[in-house]
Image (cartoon, rainbow, N blue to C red; front, top):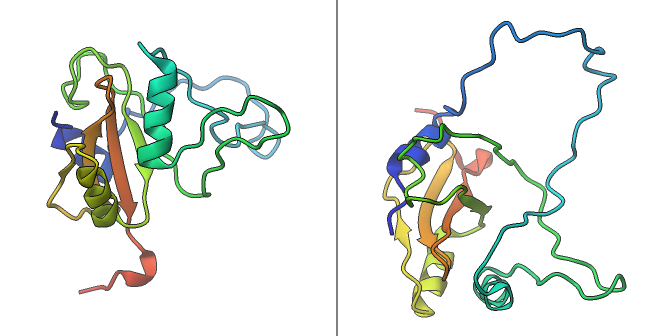
Length: 160
C-alpha cells in the first residue's frame, strides 16, 4: 500500500482538474444559483458491508448508518473539503483499479497514525509538511485507499 506522493503534492499545491475554459452558458447570476452544501453521504460497494462499516466505526470513529430515524448519523466537523476528479489514467491515486480515495481530516495525524498502528493497521505518514498540512495513507480491509489530512493551523503558521 502506498498512496502516491503525486496525489498528495497535487492536492497540496491546489492542482486538481484544469479549469474549463470557454465553457460558458447563459446562467443565473452566481448569487441566485443554487449549490450543494456538502456531502450528505458516500456510498460504495463492499464485499462485506457490515464488517467494513464496523472497521470504519472502530478505527476511524465513523458511526454506522442508523437503523431508525430516531438515531442521528455520523456528523462531521465543518471544514474544508476538496472535490477533484482525476484523469482515468492517473497513477497518482496509488491503488490500481480503485476509483476513489477517501480523504479524512484529522486533528492530530501522529496520534491517529499511532492509534491505527497499535490496532495492526499499516499507515504511511508522508514526512513532508505541505503548505496546507500533513498527510498519511492507508487502506481499509478491502483495499480502498484512505488519506488522512491534518490541515495547517493558520494561527500556527509563521512567515519567514
